Length: 299
Image (cartoon, rainbow, N blue to C red; front, side, top):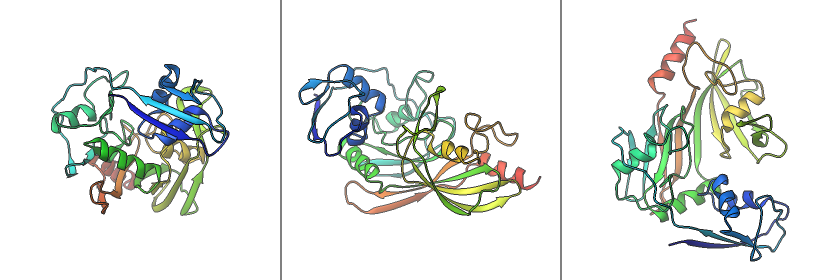
């Protein structure tokens, strides 16, 4: 059965595909663009293009078709479960595990592991059942996963309202100063390399808070808090101000101390969908990141 949604535009000038993602955070932008191309999303009753600029008062109708059959199969992949109830899981994702299937890794993902652990999961969607936010494949740490549609909507709404607290431990090259700050710069696709993100004037709003935990010779260990959730936001913002993340070969350079980027989702706070109670969870640095810190302090 299809989901049908209707919105009335209250702010002029935005692109249709960006508007859809803002109003329906459970949809990726690429999926929204596909729905627009296939006629599932209309403006004032007419088919439109993703690039259409909206006007105040425009009526946007969205049909989310039922998921097509997929080859998603449960896989018995070990999971570190921090919390679980009838609505959701909080898992501590290891580095190296992709969150959901995509070209290049059609299986052996967090989604496959979730389906094995929770075969009764009842969330509509295609290859991302229960996923309300993501971590890069090589980023470790805390993620929340919805078990049903109501929980997914609740968590998605909290993310949209920016009431979910997400903090990260990050090691960067250089001695970052001042010791507290906010990086505010729009992020979008890098026009010279579509596989990367970059700070671009046409990008989406992005805000990153940081505070210095300690200096380690020519490195700085940071606690980073995301106010927005753009793709590769931490890595792009820190690289843009001249302090690339250690081990980040995409936005920085290879490190002799680490085989992946030093980013760990260490803290997650949100309200439980069923009760509204605010809860917080934390995760310690995994052994590879702890080892990198020790090697650096011994230099």
